[in-house]
Image (spheres, rainbow over the protein chains, first blue to last red):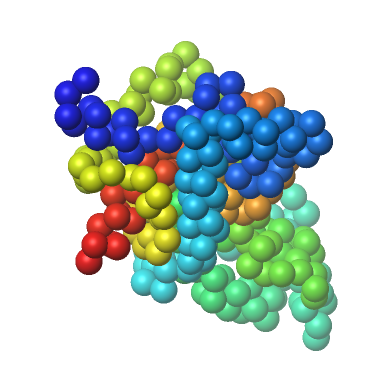
Amino acid sequence: MDKSQSNVAEQELNPCEHMTDLVSRRSDNTLAGPAKWYTDFHVATCPKCKKALIGLRQVNAQVKEMSSTDPNLKLDEKDWKSIEAGWDQEEKGFQSGT
Amino acid sequence: MTVMESQASPSSKARDEYSRLAKKLEGTLLTHALRMCAGDIDWARDLAQEALIKGYGAYLQGSFGRDTNAKAWLLRILTNTYINQYNRKKKWESGLDINLLNAAEAPAKLKGTSTSPEDVALLGVLDEPLQNALNALQEDQRICVVLVDIEQNEYSEVAKMLDVPVGTVRSRLARARLKLYTSLLPYAKNRRLV
């Protein structure tokens, strides 16, 4: 493995293959029962899965915090003309009962 | 005349009301559409247009009540419109291996720093890097992130929407989150160093 490959590998999360889905679900608190208990037990003794769980929780938190609106994004005049034309069609359809 | 009465027969008032709603929420719709469309602004505009037109049809039919959350209602229409397109495309492209098609699409700027990632938190990653990282995901993984992590749908609901087993949603989401971490780590580290 050359240096660049090594660096990429260092940056990746590598949970145990059989734990990948479980760690992901543990990170968003959708695990329950024996699966949750087993995952917690495994994570407590496995550094790779522990690191993955911490990392995935950070990812989830960031995604949830994405702002819901970019104030710079606007439909342009051409878009609104198409929409108005579509609304005309919807009104016609409504009036004709279709 | 009440909102419901105005919906019973299309009038300029009903249209004005819906138009005001549409203009108020256009930025939110486009932001959401852009996330689903991997940053393709033309596609996002088309999607937002289609959703606003469909929404008006539903509005005239009376599906928008006094207590309806306008933002959630329009975002649901937008998402359903996207999912319909996604499912149609999936059937159309069913002979192709989408993993191979998307394998080389990750932007180069998301890759490669040489410092150690140990204990580095992704705190304070900006929206733009996060959007870039989302864009770099395969479509089937990205839509799971949007529906589960952003829209907060249950795994089982998303499985129904996408017409796939719930286990498929779980594994796509797990792979997507691992990729997001790898993509975002360089941004987080750079931000801490500044």
